[in-house]
Amino acid sequence: MSSARTYEVRTHGCQMNVHDSERLSGLLEEAGYLAVPEGEQADVVVFNTCAVRENADNKLYGNLGHLAPVKAKKPDLQIAVGGCMAQKDRDTITKKAPWVDVVFGTHNIGSLPALLDRARSQAEAQVEILESLEVFPSTLPTRRESAYAAWVSISVGCNNTCTFCIVPSLRGKEKDRRPGEILAEIEALVAEGVTEVTLLGQNVNAYGVEFGDRQAFSKLLRACGEIEGLERVRFTSPHPAEFTDDVIAAMAETPNVMPSLHMPLQSGSDKVLREMKRSYRQSKFLGIIERVRAAIPNAAITTDIIVGFPGETEDDFEQTLHVVREARFSSAFTFQYSKRPGTPAATLENQVDPEVVKQRYQRLTELVTEVAWEENKSLVGRTVELMVAEGEGRKDAATHRLTGRGPDNRLVHFNADGADGVRPGDMVTVEVTYAAPHHLVADNPVIAVRRTRAGDAWERRTAAPAPSKGVGLGMPSIGVPAPLPDAPACS
Image 1 (cartoon, rainbow, N blue to C red):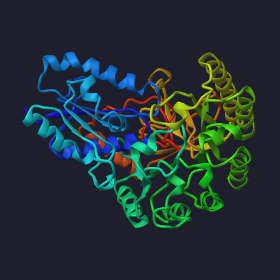
Image 2: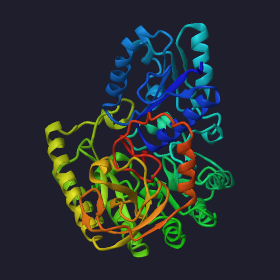
Image 3: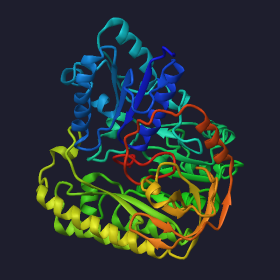
Image 4: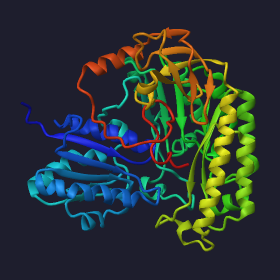
């Protein structure tokens, strides 16, 4: 009977948080902790938090409240809170929830095991928040959620000053990894069986600003194309202001860079974009979309949109609808504006009436769904190669289908006939037979199966003890590694 303490990591927020949670799991396992078996109470519960959305506070304190009676019955239970909410509310978490043992910030996730030990030995809460990054997170051990696809962080922090966003004050200024270090990590992942990577950054296409190379990101994409065995490369999230033609050319000319692009719009109104301090305008945004489609005709483009930013008029909102119609997004993450204390927008006058925001949001989501459905219908009859996914088809058991993602990152539920023994990470070729707004269906038998090293890696992983399933997510994903959480990486 093992005496090792068990852990669970619960994640909220962007892809950066999901990847940070993989590092937290790696740190805890290196320190001797074990992932808690499904359905059991862990000895250590870690919350990796987000501060982007208005309900982030309520979500955190609600979850902490649920653990208070558990801790009363199990005093040796330790609770740790990290991430953006911890960085922001460092002085209030232990006051509002005195049963929390450890609070750590975005810049010192590597301190977690030591802080847990200190809290246990000193029998008092430990709060450690650093103001700047001391060690790039990529140097920390990582327990990756997927055997066949991986997040790779190329930068952390952001140099933009968007008035609605609190991330720069919590993640700090942009810090870039050197290209050789990034490529070495990708090569090591490929050697382990990974065949898809998603490059991560708060403002991923600004990569290189720290060492003065304005084309560093496009060069990195092309270098990824030289890595043997790497089949799919994605990235998120870029910023329209820094999205240059050399990146479009690299996407079009590098075969393993996938034809999918997440390009945050936020608003279609030039006036609102100015108030947001977004350094592009509608015409530039639509120009990027036009050039991407010219170079990559089959590209699927997704976006983020905020409804009800302070001062938004009906005409401003109509401009956003216009961009949705013109850009033909395959999907959009839509948000009702919410005040975030500490952001300039929170103090702006002309806050929009919540009922108006709600009505506009409904109109926007209806249009987004309509456009996405039309785009998906155009794919019926197409043959597509899918990477078989794990855990993304929530109704697969009931429908007797499997699920995979195409090169454009669309989710496809497919008939498993002809795919005996296929594993997550393997590739199947199918014909699309039906389109819904948020997914496709392929109900004819599978045309071809290609077993891969990624499938082999998944098979090896499943023979080992399963990792903790603590990532609390729930929106369509960008890349295969994990479903996209509450909000995309801010950009």
